[in-house]
Structures are given as C-alpha cells and as structure tokens.
Amino acid sequence: MGPRLPRAAYGALLGALLACAEAHETGEPLSGNPSLFRWSLPAGVVPPPVPVDNPMSDAKVELGRRLFYDTRLSGNGAFACSSCHRQEFGFADAKNIPLGSTGQAHTRNSMGLTNVAYQRNFGWADPGTLSLEAQALIPELGELPVELGIKGREADVLARLRAEPVYQSLFPTSFGATPDPFTLTNVNRAIAAFERTLISANAPIDRFNRGDSTALNAAARRGLNAFNTLRCTRCHGGPNFSIAFEAGAPAGDEFANTGLYNIGGTGAYPTRNGGLFEHTRRPSDMGRMKIPTLRNIAVSFPYGHDGSVGSLDDVISNYARAGRLVPVGPNAGDGQLNPFKDRRISGFAISPQGRADLVAFLNALTDSTFLTDRRFANPWR
Image 1 (cartoon, rainbow, N blue to C red):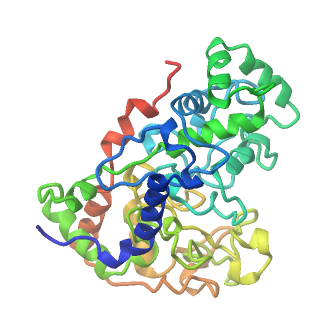
Image 2: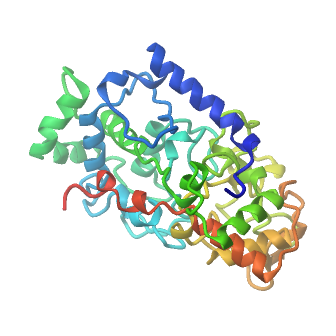
C-alpha cells in the first residue's frame, strides 16, 4: 500500500476534531444546532467547530454564498470577496499582489480559503482575529489597504442588499424574527457560515490515505517519503498540512519567519510586511507569518506572504538553502543568515529527482472536485 503520513502528525488535530464530533452527538453548543444543517463530507471527516452565536443552516449558507460573490458588498459596487478568492485557485487569486476595490495595491498575497474553518486564527499575521466573523470586518472596513471599501458607506451597502428580492427572503429565514435582519453583523455571520463549508478532503493524498493504493503515482509516493524524511511535517503536518490548523500545537508555532528576507543583514522585512512584529513590536517577531495549508497548493500560486516566490520549485530551493538570497535591490540580503529565522528552517540536500518527486507529491494535494464543486460556485451566474 505504500507509506502514509506519520500517525503522530494527525494526533493533535484529530483529538480536537473528535471533540467536535462528541459535541455534535451530545448536543453541546460548540457547533451550534446541528439539526439546522447537514454536512456533506467524506467518511471520517468531522465538521469544523461552529460558534454558539452563529449556528449553521441551509438558508444561511446560501445567503453567505450569494454575499461572497456579490459586488454590491463593496463601496463602489464593483468588487466582491470572490474578486480575491477564486474557486479555481483554491479560493486564492493567482496574483502576486491583489488590488482592492479602488485599485490600491496590497502588500500581502490573498490567502487561499481551503479548509479555512479549521484554523485557530485568521490572516497572515494577526494573532487577535479568532473567528471568520471577525475576519470579515477587515476587508470590509479596512483602509490600509482598502479592500471592499465600505467604511462610512455601510448604510448604502445594506440598502442595496435590502432591495434584492432574493435577500428579502434569505435574511429573515437565516436570522429569524428580529426587527431588522439586514445588519453588517448578519452579513458577516452568513459569509462565515458559507466559508465553513469550504472543505477539501478528496485530493489524491486523501484517497491514498483512505486505502486507494492507485491514488498516488510512483513519483508522488517518493515525494511523500521525502516530505516525511525532510521533516516538512514540523510546519506542515496533520490532515491540513499546516500546524496553524492543529488545535494541540503550541501557541505561536503557527507563525514562522522562513528567511524570505534579511534586508541589509539586520533581519528586517519590507515596510508594512513585518509579520507579527507589526502587532507586538518585538524584534524576534519580525517576519513571522502564518504557516498556510498545503492543500491545493499547486493552484494557489504564487507563494510567500507577498507572492514573491513564483513556483513550487522555487519554494523548495528556498527551504533547501535555509533562506532566500536576494542579491540586489532595496530588499537585498541573505535570508539564510536572518537572526530571527525560525528554528525549523534548517536546510537540506536534495537531488533533481528528489525535487521533482516532492513537487509531484505537492501536486497530489490538489482536490479537483473542490475546485469545481457547484455548491461553492457563483450563484448569480
């Protein structure tokens, strides 16, 4: 049958997911009211935790899907959540740097939303955003950079939504007998409910781990062995291939400085891209960014928090070297020598064949059914 991902790598997250399952069975409030929504997941995949104050329902998920794709949820009516999170790219956008609704360039890459509901916190370097509902406010109201750009225009946006006949039914159905269900809080609750359904668990690696020995070709199997031998699982372990999704992982380990920059040999990262340092002001937090999931990684290019790494082969080169060398320009420096680089980035030797095998394994994390599932597609078309 060939090798599997190490059993130990699944332990922490599996325990948390089993706790979720027990809460469903016993009626505990962790996942809201399960009678309102039936998850459609492969065998053995447990639904993500759901906040008590935002239980799932079919109507709410459909409302959230429509809002996710609705350009009326932007200041100028020309932009939607889906503008930066496209299904065919694992809900990333295949751009180095996204542009907001006003054309303002961002400093960070659009994160993919694959299995986003299993994360512990949200955003590239924001330890304080602990729910999808809270995260939705950032692109809506943020001004540096402007994304959806609705700050100061909330009433206008809600008026647009009230005028849509589909919403006149979905908002009251989703949020019950309230004086006015058309609130920004409810908008964000609905979007979060939809995002919780964005679960990918049918990639070749999943089928292989469920017992289908033909799901991985020979190169991908060798790549899996390399992935384990090189201890990539230190950062990208567990069912979601990221420690940021593992409930039992040590707090803070979901962020890492990978040696992508070392400007002037001081450990500095580019302005407005300092990672956790921007929140804590601790020098040791310079460059520490969220460790993303590797699920659907082959289609969620380019890579790095700023989209500055163009290919999976380049990613491997940077890690093999234990830090990227930027030889010239304003960001010049040797990331291998970054004084704040994460202890897990230690470098390794790899042959051309081993490199190709590792890329083959990473390609085997692509779930084509997730990328084309009509449940997640634009309902306005």
